[in-house]
Amino acid sequence: TSAKTAFDVSLGLVGVLCLWLGLFAVAKEAGLVQYIARGLAPLFRRLFPEVPENHPAQASMTMNMAANMLGLDNAATPLGLQAMRELQTLNPSSTIATNAQILFLVINTASVTLLPVTIFMYRAQLGAADPTSVFIPILLATAISTLAGILAVAAVQKLPIWDRVVLAYFGGFALLISAVGIYITGLPQAEQARQSALAGNFIIFSVIVGFLYAGWHKKVRVYEVFVEGAKEGFEVAIRIVPYLVAMLVAIGVLRASKALDGFLWLVAKAVGALGLNTDFVPALPTAVMKSFSGSGSRAMMLETMQHYGVDSFPALLAAILQGSSETTFYVVAVYFGAVGITRTRHAIACGLFADFVAIISSIVIGYAFFHA
Image (cartoon, rainbow, N blue to C red; front, side):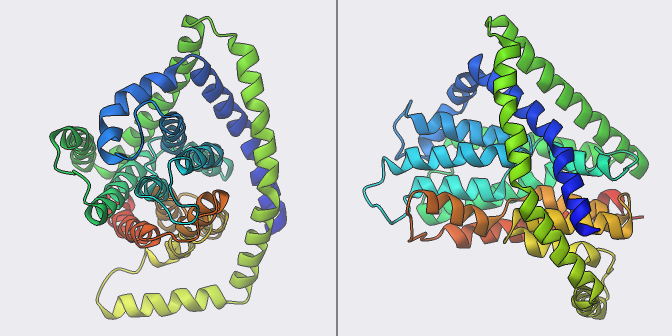
C-alpha cells in the first residue's frame, strides 16, 4: 500500500513540475531573472562581498532562491548546484567552504517559501477541503527560519547586517511578514484559513500570468520554450520514485511495528508532564526527518495525512513543518559534495539552528491558526 501511494504521488507531481519548470524557462528567456538579480544586487554586494558584481553565480543564486520561494525544491536543486559550482570558481581552496558558499547553503536550508505549490498539490491529491489553507502559516514560519539562519551566519562571518541597505531589505521584508501575520491572526479562525487560501491562489495565478505576459511582451516563443522547460518535469518526477517508495515503505513498517508510535508516546509523556498540550506530537516525525531527508520528511508528512486525515491538526501542522525549512544534511552533502568541499566550517551548525527555529515557530503558528 505504501509503495502504491508513493508511485501515485510521484506521478501526480509530473503535471505540476512540468508546469512550473516550463514557466521558469519562459521567465528566464524573457529576462525576468536579470531584473530580479538587479533588484537584489545591492543586498548581494553586502551579504556576498566575495562575489564580484555581475558574476554568473548571482544569476544562478537568484534563480535558485526564486525556485525555493515557489516551493519547487526539485527545480531549485539543479540551479543551486550550478550556483555552487560558480561560487567554487572564486574559492582559493578546493576543500574548504568559503563564506559566500556557507551563506548561500544556509539560505537554502532555511528555504524561504512564498508559494509551497508542491505541498498544495499533495493536500489536493489526498482530498483536502481547501489545499491552500496552509499558505500564510508556511509563509510566516519559513520567513522566521530564514531570518534566523541569515542572522546566525552573519554573526559568525561578521557581515554588515546593520548596514542601512541590508536593514532596508530585511526591514521591508519583516514589516510585510509582520503585517500579514497581525492581519491574519486578528481574524476568526475559519476566516484565517479562507483568506490564506485566497491569497495563495491569487499569488499563484498572478505569477503564472506575469511569467506568460513577460514572455509575450519580450517576443519569446512562449510555447516552444515552455515545452522545452517542461520536459525536465517528467524526468525529475520519475527520479524521485525510488526514494519515495523506499521511505514510505520503511515508515509503513515503523508504523505497523508500533516503533514510531512508541517514540511519539515517549515524547507525549514528556510534554504532558510539563503541563503542555500534546496534540502537536503526531506531526513531529516530519520535523525530526526534515533535517536529514527531504523525501523522508515528505513521506512522513504524507503518512501523517493518511493516518490522521488530511485536514486534521497533525496533518496541517506537518504541512507547515514541511514548508518551513529545507533538508540541512541533504543540502550540505549534495551542494558541497558537487564541488569537492569537505571542510564545511560553520555551515551545519547555522543550518541546524535555522531548522530548530523553524520547528518551534511552526508549532506556535500551527496552534494559532488551526487548533481550537
